Structure formats: structure tokens, C-alpha cells
Amino acid sequence: MDNVKILVVDDESRMRKLVKDFLAKKDFIVFEAGDGEQALDIFMKNKDISLIILDIMMPKMDGYETCKEIRKISQVPIIMLTAKSDERDELTGFDLGIDEYITKPFSPKILVARVEAILRRTSDVMPDSHIEIGGIKMDLSAHLVTVDDQTVDLSFKEFELLNYFMVNKGVALSREKILNNVWNYDYFGDARTIDTHVKKLRSKLGEKGEYIKTIWGMGYKFEVEDETFNQN
Image (tube, rainbow, N blue to C red; front, top):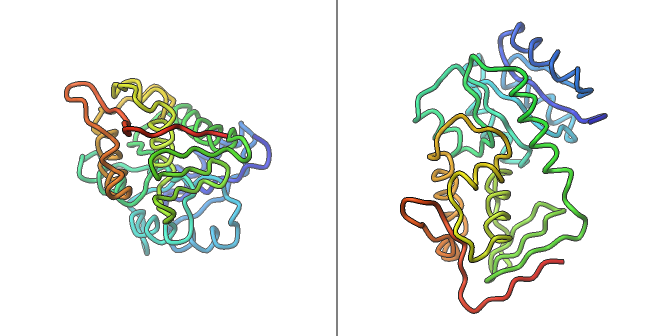
């Protein structure tokens, strides 16, 4: 993936070098930041950065606060890289719009695979591709969602999840199938990740969130009565 820029934010120089070396082998252009303030400065000067790998525990400005500031201006995909493994920490990250969550220690090869999976999905969207169901409109090329003509801000993963639901309208989807198709890698966590994203997505869609039906003991189904599916 030539000329694709990635920002690695971690206060440990050895960790930054490890991640950078593995990414450089795949020809990514890697920027480094040792804290959140430096990361924001770099991102503001390089708005074409395609993905951010962000640590939580850092001086000056931690990963959570850095994510908050970035989400005010951009929906760039963010992978949270952290030594914390508590469920509450993961949920906090997802609430702030984190797209992936990797706990240290980790396999650099797995990290690179997840980076590549995210970037493939953001670059494979066909121009002028739109989906519209039940008052929800998705512009895939512009990464834009509107509900009854009102713009809704979704994280990268929420956008992908909604797209998968709408494309599979009326189909019962197991959590495992959602993980395989939306996360697109061998996921080592548990299905609560999906439930967290579905909860946030429903909330952001307002009344339209009711289209996402829970199938107890299995997963979810996107269902809208008496609506046609339009994609072009």
C-alpha cells in the first residue's frame, strides 16, 4: 500500500520502533508521536493520515483524551494499543469511537494484518455507491450517513456494521458471521464487542435503530417492513 500514512502514538520509543519497523516492511509511511499533544500536532499538519495506532497511558494527554480531540474533526480509523485489559477500559474506548482494540503484549504481524484489513475496506469502496432503506441513506464513497436527511456521525466500525446490516436486510446474522465479515480477521476477543457497537449504532440512528432486531441466542437482523432496497 504505497504512500499510505499511519500515525503511531506511544510514549515508549521501543514500542514505536517495533510497530514502525513492521509497518515499514509493508511500505507504509509511518509518523511517530510520543504523547497525545504531539500526535494532534502531527495529525493537524497531515490530514491525509489514513489510520492512527494509539496508546492509552501517555504523559501530557492520554489516549482517551487524544481520541476525543481527533473525533471532533475526523473519523479516521483508530486502533487502541494498550496494556489495559479490563472490560470497562475497552468499553470506554469503543464509546469514544475506537475502531479496534489490541492489548499488549501482542503479535506485530496480527497488528499489521488488522491495519491492512481496515485500509483495504476503506479503499475498496466503489465511487457513487449509495444504499437507501427506510429513511437511512449511506454514501459509501463519501463515508456519509443520513437519517431522514439529517447527517449522523458514525465511527468507521459503526459505518461498516450498518453497511453490512443494510446489505443483508432481512437476513438473520450470527455474531460469528458479523465478526468474520465486519471485523474481517480472526478475532480473539468475545462477542460483546458486537453488542457494544450495536448499542451505540442503535442510539445514533434514533427511532431507526429499531430496524436492528435482536435474535436472542444468535445475533441480529436488520428488518424494515414494506421498504425497498436501493443500491447504485
